[in-house]
Length: 324
Image (cartoon, rainbow, N blue to C red; front, side):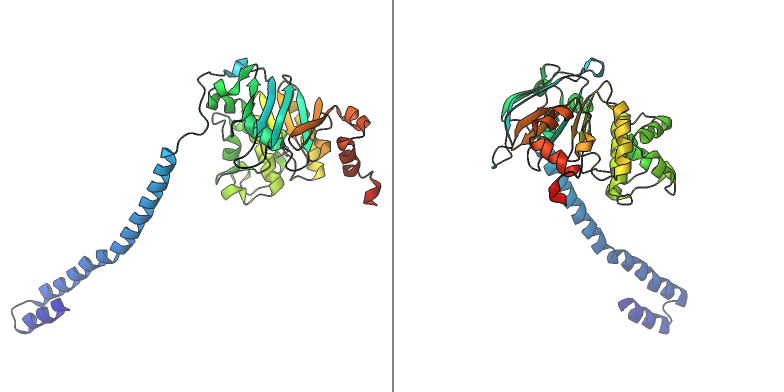
């Protein structure tokens, strides 16, 4: 306003040319526009500083699970697992596992079943050292996992969890995650073994289709099959399937089971399942209840015991009179 008033007076008095006056008016506007963006810059600065504080807080957090200094070369892993007198409880809660002992021979497939909260998934998380046992010892090929380098330990184990995580990227990138040097042919082969190739081919861009954040563009069964393909591509000596077929239909489950018979050969496999049909062909099946193993044996041996496993099988196979 000052520029308009005083500049206008100078022009009327002939002391300032019209051209210079017009230039002054527009140059002031060009000067003021950046000030309107100053508030946005300050807002973005505050957001960035808040993010930096969170990141630095995370980096300053002490490591709860210490690394061991013993390496675990891939070509030396046999896959023999031993749980010796394991006891574990989450913070402030009752023990989930109580003096549990379990031996899994190398290259065998075992199944673990039991009611929700019986400690099945906790057993796997302890093997991966997401948590530390309060007492007891877990070993791989006779070596305490606490002595092993944490990165080596987790790279030797393939884990397909019930809660599948997919990131915002293509189908191929999600399968390749963890096996970054894999070729396109290897990715497709893993997808075929996981019974995922057919539905991937039907996607708009096939293996180059963006799956969305956490795989929101795919169904639960499709996400699980991609997770299985990811584990197959990793080709670990120890494979963990934690309710890996819970979100697929019966036809797809049957196809995946057929593929798993090939996948599990020459590798130690732990299959946790509520569907007993998933683990009926395992070398040994363990039934857990309240943190302890109450039954063990093959499918036929457990049926002959007429215990918890037999009751579960009767209900799931539709033979129970209570279903009528």
